[in-house]
Image (cartoon, rainbow, N blue to C red; front, top):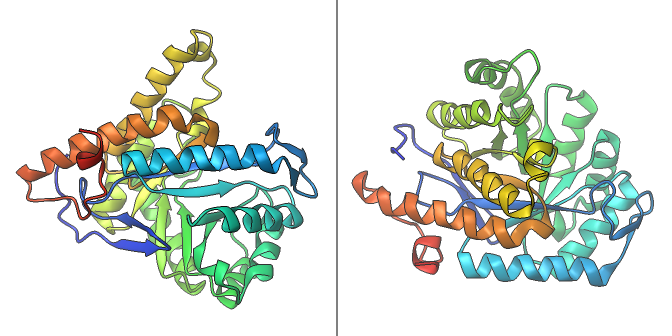
Length: 300
């Protein structure tokens, strides 16, 4: 992996640093919990869930993060503001990781932000996401609530090519994020289907080349509908999925939304191995790991 000529931005959110040159900081891994049809959720409207089972997943991922050196954000996905608030309060109590504010419904996300505005938790929240369907109400809410960290979704069905996503950022999304008062911008290059992960990966490289922002994507959006591979059994799927995740890292991904948190046992070792090899190759370009808590030193 070559060194980017553009100066790379790094952010520290809570106890996690994201961004930088390839090999400098470990890839941030983002697992989802409480998503639609998640079996541990009994009432997705009120946000009622099995706390013991949720804790098992959180603790398992925390152990893997400590063992590999890959830090984590946590992505609770809620259908209502009430559910999102319950999820975030639980996660904030039982972890020290940054937490995404994520829902298919914008108003639910905004109501949750209003609830946490002015509290210590707001400093740990990452808004997901500012996209082409943004509204002025959304911009006002982000600014008024003091949200400083956000993912910007550089994706549109009319902007599929990497160069078009750069234009979308320049012409629309980055000015919007600036108006919203976002200080720490992370760019999700978007995934349409499994083959398009390659385009998303190329877009990650273009974003980092052009702007230096931390960038990544969500291969999980396509991986878990990959029926041909899933029919071949868990081992075949996990091997192929690991290669897909690793490809995005090789194009410079600073974060990867990998899907349900229960898959952490194979995701963390796979991504840690890619990080370690990338960091080892960094000596050719003069890039060294910025922390001793790096997969290069943890897994070899």
